[in-house]
Length: 366
Image 1 (tube, helix red, strand yellow):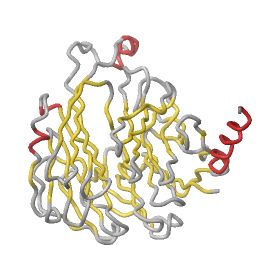
Image 2 (cartoon, one colour):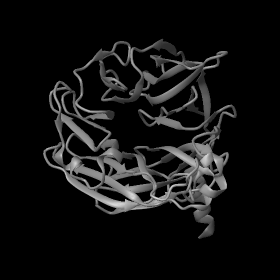
Image 3 (cartoon, helix red, strand yellow):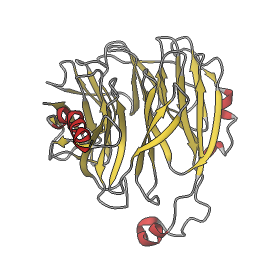
């Protein structure tokens, strides 16, 4: 029996072990740096990274575009600082900026500013060219059915408990135009916060424990016609999740520097309403993105923690993969890859990319 188990495990991990994340692009210019805020590959040919180029205190909004699967990349400027990116297909996409919402019909080669969105939004998610959702600060969730020309607030989002000034919705995903999930949280200031900043006495901060806070979820099964709202007091924050049409999904919870673990990945059985279960956590690895392939293979990307003061010092990039959610393969990654956060983009079963927040793009190759 042990031999059979060993052979099955080898069969699962062997194809993945032969692959390596190789650098395709890295911004390496003197006196300037490129920060990537969001990243997408809507198809095997077209990829786009949004962020800014910094020189001293000056920050210039910018985008990186490839039209040949990452063989070449073109860096150009944008008119407004980008926050996030969403693509419906290989040409139609939307960009959220600090000042509004933009639309492209040519994978970022052109951008058109849309009418002002009523609120401070962080992200959009569209299910058709006309139907979409915007989420953001102060319990804001909006929906449109005319291609972002007008927006209607989702009342159930505002009705969640907690002070709106400390609340936000941050992530959404739809399995199809009817079924989708939106998540957010309420994070008020710590009631017994130290009188001095964390960096002045980090050991005192470490002796504290992470406090639970409200986590929000909104689910629709009829394309936004009605919403089921839930809230719960939990540790950490669900920062992202990916729903798979097969009935499974994968999610990520990130904890503060006061938590015992930096992050935790979990599997969602949304089709059977089977709830969720934890599949990975490590005190020394901070996961910042997750992905679930069509065949059920899970990918986790992040960094090896340089210390407990998180989101400050870059660490070595790590990518883990598993097909049984028990045995995890530490995939080979270009030794030059370091980051604070990573982002995954996998348009199909054979093309997989990853971006780091400090300007590197890598592709999984044999």
